[in-house]
Length: 426
Image (tube, rainbow, N blue to C red; front, side, top):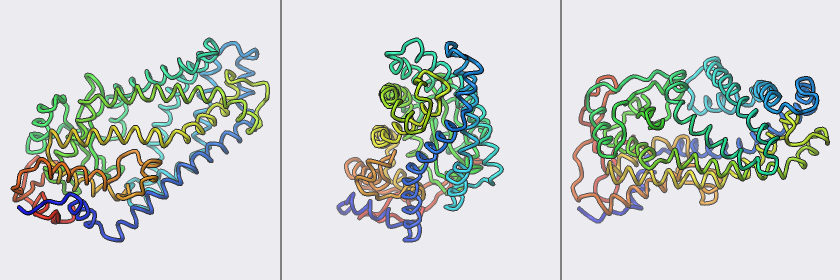
């Protein structure tokens, strides 16, 4: 076998994208960067409207004239806030999350189907959010000097609860999860689960193409709720066994390395910092939005101001949160290389995600806006792994699978021939 050049192999994979597809991916991704700013501006305008309406200050006055019953007023005002915020931001959400996605071919739903799911999740979020908001105001009232510390802990607890409960109670509301049938797919996932210490008793295929053709799998849940789930989009895009093993290996890396727990811990620390900054910036935003100068941060009547500050702090934190997430994703990629050892499968799978994540951003663009390492950098890492660990022989063929039967069939070559030129346009 002639010398294998990881850089050349990486470029060869990138070259499998047509110029039109590359231009479309870049336009979609960079447009998404602007959505972050526009979304923040929408939140400011929404907060201004809500402050000027006087709804929340009036509601708090009616429920708690002396502002002493923090939990009750926080609960009621919080619930109203969640509902009003959803209504006011619905046109923006319809554009950003449905119309724009639809225009790029990344959403398979009608607007009514999308709206139904959005309304259902928002209703659940409103109830849960109202309780969390009420607890937060209780902390502000009773722990005024260090409420931000306890508030961060509250966020961490809620995040952990969501990880445990979402696979059991939330995700099945959106999609149908069916046990993977006996066959090549299940056997490959079970074998990889045994090798990595991932639970193998809950392996599902779900109808992800109901929402989108995005190429994805996940290992979600904690403790007894953990399960492996593969979107049927993987099969409709002709995934071969090397891709499935690579992608599932990546997701198992998140589980085995406790990235969920680590993420909850990081989220807790970030929430502490965010709440601390919010405590300091609240008077400034109260003035900018024209709220009652006498209303303090512990007044539920000034809730739109509190959330406007949080939106601003979240915007500032975007590069930091993205950088932390990229480290976690890179670690999961490395886990997949070690345990699944499918660098070409990983590369082919990543190329299929480039339609919604432009593969070759500038370094600053990646730092500020990418919550995963760029496709180019991830493929290069896989090719460098291949150069260091793969044997000289190249598999003669890959294996395609059917999600319905689990049967395997021989397909075109799974690894690039010497020199790094991949075959096929997967």
